[in-house]
Image (cartoon, rainbow, N blue to C red; front, top):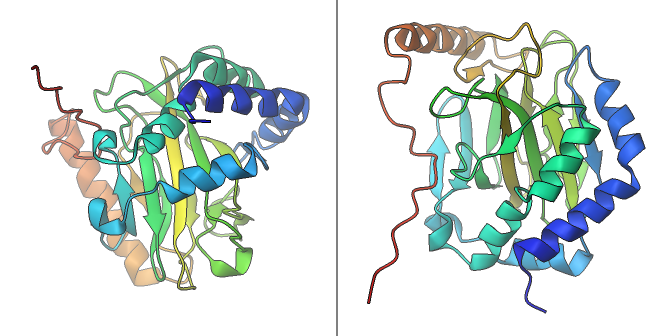
Length: 278
């Protein structure tokens, strides 16, 4: 059987529908911190393995390495195994969007075909993503970013391997909640004014793969939200790096006040090449 986005989406909907009430409760009980839910065994195990095996080599992806982050990302879907695009766009199926919208009690939201800041990511040993707030808007600054979908595909990933999602419901002064990047696990996290999150450094010689999507809306998840760029912080013991990252965020916000659409176009967006006519 050839896996396509419709088949994957159907299975995702079935899995979510079975636990809809529990997942909704999980998401909304975190309303005073970082809202999230996760569901395990989302797809048949073999399907998840197929998706993981379709991931491109790191050399075919874009390395994002700085004081803020160190990871490989891929967004140009027409350059990879077609199953990667099928998996990503399965989460953009209207049926999937609808059931997740209902679970999260959001009146209106939509997926992003351009994959702005989404797509796929891989992290190897020593790679990381420091505590941050996601950019509040889409690329055109027309819609609010409201949900972050993370689907993990690496077989037998364990907590002690690192590379796990950390959410900081009470800010960076208290310990985070760790959500293991477990095989065949989908995490759905709200993106709003309090949604500080990070990915702990990978500490094993292994590769942690993730399929990611964002959903956007005409209204913010939190009515108190205001526009902001992606803001990074250091981990609690990184005092000097934290000061540098605070200044970095302040400077980039100043630039956006002068140039609301930004100065440099973000390359992390899908620019599909037009098909050649014969």
